[in-house]
Image (cartoon, rainbow, N blue to C red; front, side, top):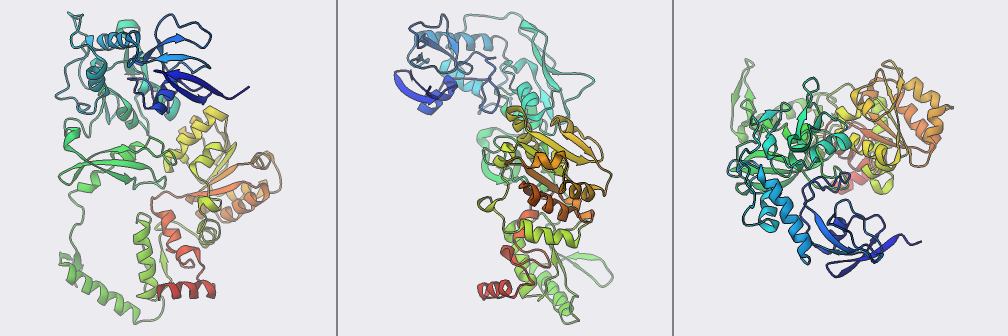
Length: 542
């Protein structure tokens, strides 16, 4: 049997994989079908019914007795589908659904944060009636702006019960604290009094809400979308590298939204990436150069004066015995800045004493980064998010995934839902993230990681599990404080064929490794102890 089906939409024949939803096939043809509950990364719900289409032939000569929801109906061989563009039946059905949705919907558009980018506004214009035939004498009203978390507010009378927020919370984030309550005309979104909506991903419910029922406290009533300038950006907090969209006005960032990057964060981001930006305009942020006087006090200075003072101090240190100059870059620089520091330290300061790790670290970690991380890219075996999602088995050590790389746990939850990914966690206790993954906790006191990892190189059920094709080992930076842990992890990976991935906590750590911000590591992954690598870099730098 073929894995493809051919059918027609609005008279256009299309061939799609078996199991494809009608609404997805229509998207391939550029045919717009209105919808509220549908989202490509959520499981179909058929909650809003706005996407109704006419199906006069199901492929067997018989039609569906009433309009069908295109977001839950799969395409079948020979099926004939007519959307609102070619069928009065579909058009009337969609207009009727819109009419029902607007009965209780408030006229908040002038003050609603969704105004100007609201699917309900747009679809009321495109598929709604010019006049309503119904009048609600007692419109459904609620107390406005119900806080369901410290950052998310709920206006229940705006809700169209699409269930996007509840499905995201349950299916994607694994934090099912926001639910649909009551029944029929009284149905509404809410949270349990004894279980507040505490999630690292709650802001995504604001972004995917199609009607402004959920809004963020940070952006509420601050601007209109058409007054904003949008710029693509990358989150600066953890090492996930999430794509974002920064919306700003008059040079001030007012909100950040998750970007659409299927290879990294898909369409999600964590609350830290979305809302932790107040430091940009912090009153105590240093914006002018400061120089230290002889009495230890700091005073403002011009850039030329500050640069002269810095050059004089570095020159004086360089005139003394070797080793008096060191460069600590930290892990939050862009790779371009990290490379500039690496080059400056070696040419201008004539020192290899440069490091990005402003945290507990070890020589063993430096060797691990130089030999197992630097110079390893997706084309040469580095673990990508897609690899992590497809991995049948994942072992984590020295790492709390949800805390240190939140987007990675969303990928792992997705893998668990779709393919039953098995996760083993080496940790002293089970965290919330461990429970959300349904992971197997391998209890280990702090410092015992190396002993466990080394033991599995000789045998055990974990070694057997990691021998499966595509298995992945995730290592966190905490292993730097455990002697022998990184070395044992490398041996375990070689013994089982599993792939290693190092997940640091800061956004610039991985780039700093590649830029050579380590004493024994040169930019591009070369080793400072190898004359050939030094000569090659010297020739490149001239």
